[in-house]
Length: 99
Image 1 (cartoon, rainbow, N blue to C red):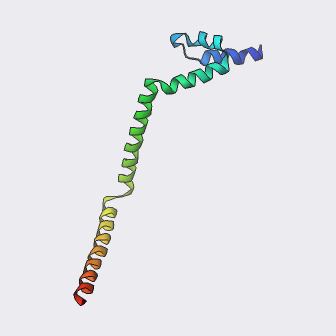
Image 2: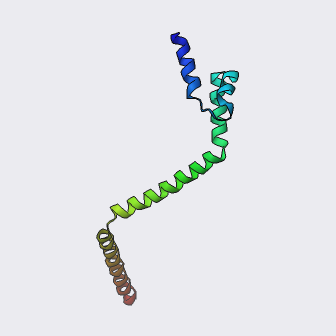
Image 3: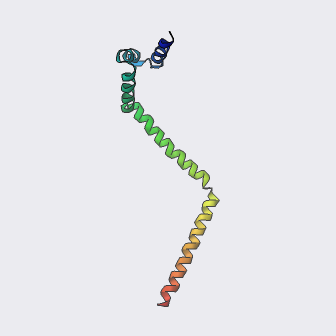
């Protein structure tokens, strides 16, 4: 009885649509798992889901970047880089005028 329960549980976990439970019983559990995985990855719904996940990820990343680079920090960074740039310009002018 106990050994049988595992099988029954597995068969129950299989989704009902398009007679998949019967298909699984006919194929045998291991083959069914392989078949199901290959089918799922090639399916249109899977691809759509994957695309949505990817899009959401990039969006989340953008949000995070927005959050952790607070505007004033960004301004400070920009200022410091601008200062550096100006210093370099001045230095360049000085060095070129000597020649």
